[in-house]
Image 1 (tube, chains in turn yellow, blue):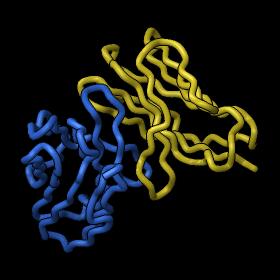
Image 2 (cartoon, chains in turn purple, yellow; image 1 turned 135 degrees about the vertical axis):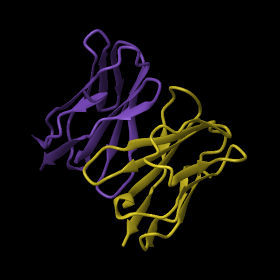
Image 3 (cartoon, chains in turn purple, orange; image 1 turned 45 degrees about the vertical axis):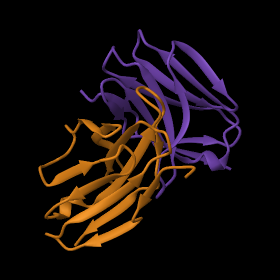
Length: 108
Length: 113
């Protein structure tokens, strides 16, 4: 079992819709959780981080954490074509583990 | 500098050559990480420094890989006797401390011919 699992997609949503990206992790002792966006040929860019159960909102982005279910999600409201990228979930336990990423395409 | 700086951006080497990749982290960041990213995959952890101490090198794929951060700032990842399977993007990231968000450099794309 991988430490961090994501659906690789591709996920396609129309412009203006809500995109929902999901991630599960295996280590219950995980302390912190991150979402990165990676455009093709570029390096990962931090979008959100969350440490406590519940929701954390920043602009059009909301991160949700459920430690009991070992589940992290990222919601993107009012999706724009510029949101089209690969979204990486990362979890910090004793090490920093990344998922393989979910490819998102926002269709104009 | 304002962000993590890596050099070179691109490196082409012949199989068997040694290469050195440099990372200059964000000023004041204690933690420094190296990752290897293959096409279509997420970054894979290689090694981690806290200041000048290499606290975890369990992700280094073989003894041909060596990393150092002698003064707790700039780090170098060295690969000896390169092989074709070493071709990948090598990412460096830094963070203020444990469990804090990491910020990535632009990476070095290494191609071994």
